[in-house]
Length: 287
Ligand code: SF4
Image 1: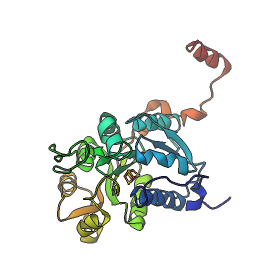
Image 2: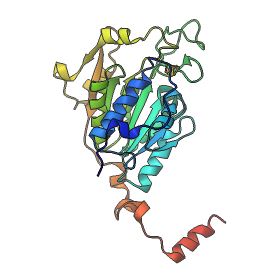
Image 3: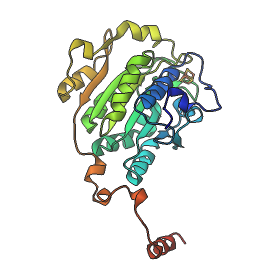
Image 4: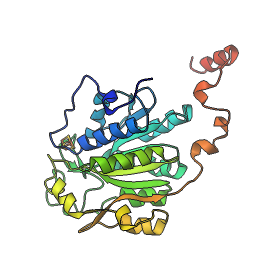
């Protein structure tokens, strides 16, 4: 049996992200995390949304599926229902996941499927050249908000916690070792795990740079924070300014939607035997 390494996920293509983009750090952390967990190219599924993050599809040698804008989570839940033994990871952006896919995000969190969603959170729609996204902060000037954003942002962490996600964490694309650890913990968690990654967009955001984040970020674990209390987790999730926490904010064990689904009690649907007559009946439904 060959050993899985980060290089196992190499394809014949090189990333076309802008040099210095935070997506590189997320990509490298994800490859490292998968390798360290022993999940090889044939052992898992990555479901991508639309956005700069979604271009990762071309440079990850693992089973992949690209959704329509905002629809990665429904696809991932369908795949998980078909084979609930398969590790399924959603790679999404703040616009894709919380804008176009916001409703899916709430309902996935409430159902607690055993999925991981990694949000590339850069506060802009980078692929369409820099419009404000749902997480853009008030005053942030973008192409679509030349005088600055006037709305309050969506907070992915508080939204995930109050909607029922059972693992909620924030990472930083500029800290690959730390992000690798968080990614491993998110993937290993049994239930809906949300990892919001602060991802500098070096082309369309000259405010939230690597330096800007490094001056403000602190690690919850180092301060003795225990991620088992929802109200405290919400308070931590709302910290933004001179100090911004990274790490696991909230974690709990709860039955997943697959645990609660009676149709899966006999094993993965993908392995269920469908006999000749049943198959004919099913096929008739599509004729
Ligand atoms: Fe990265 Fe921004 Fe360039 Fe997209 S536009 S690849 S998010 S730096």
